[in-house]
Image (tube, rainbow over all chains, first blue to last red; front, side):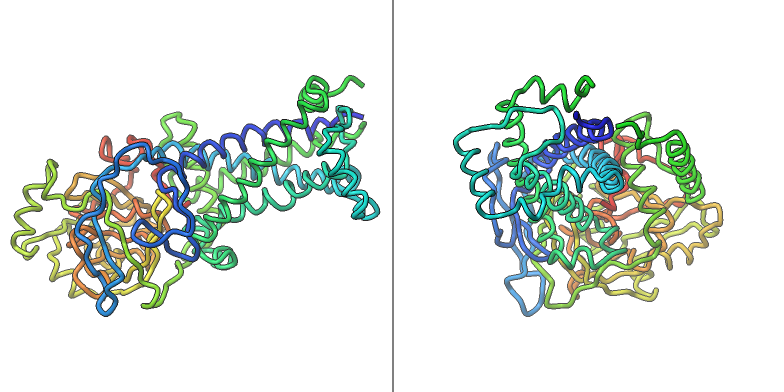
Length: 243
Length: 250
């Protein structure tokens, strides 16, 4: 049995949107490649993680450090003397357009997956399958590159089911929720969303790592498609198997 | 699989629902122009969705004095040192400690006129400790003191046909907000920061605070306020023609 048409449509749309989100997300991160925890974080405060990207020009430094709060000399203001790399104008707009795509397709996919029984039947690992021995045997088979041949349909292995379930039920929802939590308008309306993640900057940091997880999945996913029979897999997930 | 998941009836219902959604947004107000630009359509979808789905007057979180953080000053840090049309005027006003600074309120108001700094300070003040979130990705918390924009608009006698409030700055930027944000209790014309006069690098003598949008909507160095019934994209000095979303609530 091949992939259902609705699965193929959702997969194609989501794939385009997620690649666009990844590219624009990187572009946005280039404007300020520092991650923080809590509610605040900026060039005048220490970073949790400084990502080694975007230093493609000489930065001119910060001028006129001045304390701006009576009684706390460590709270300062300073003037930025240089322009940064900032393509967030189109970057942000394309990011949010793609995010709309993921949310719309994601909601339709979740509804269809639950209603049709697709998740129960094909995606969710069965409790009986999830034994340490079986999992270990699957890991060993993968490490030895003993890859099952493509079927062109949703007859998934145990690790495959686990990976897909983590993407569909954990990583993507987390990316969407942390993304929403960063919106000042949404945070005003639903304050719990942002505080659950520990503040604006924490949400941003989690958002980044949620996408790192999705990016790593994408690499392995594409590699497995190639190793298990590229032609059959691509046909199965686009035009569909001949019935 | 025989059964189709998306039936004709389902498609019809979905179509009617989305048409209803669009009619609803029509009633909520005028959407900014897209000029046929796909990205601007996406921005408008976000704006319309926020207006339809989220409560209109919810307040942003207010922090405590202990949360106040360091605050970078970016973009224009002093209009006087630039080559803009308002630079000379700003230099002169700065020289006189802004005693002669004036804010004009024009357009669809019963009594157009100007406010001096002292006039603004006679109106009831509001102080709020809020987070400034920059589109670049950084954030900072400060205490802002100023007069709610609503009080200034009411003092000038805003007319019922008004839909947007536009702003012009000494460094020549042009921007606008809708009336829902203009009358939001936390939208203020700030003249104080952390208990002091608002410093020039942060937009002094007076800047706008639009707390439910990103930092770039909180215009620094405010000079003119224009009330209008039509959307004004600000031309070459506005967000849209520079490639930026007019609505920045996300």
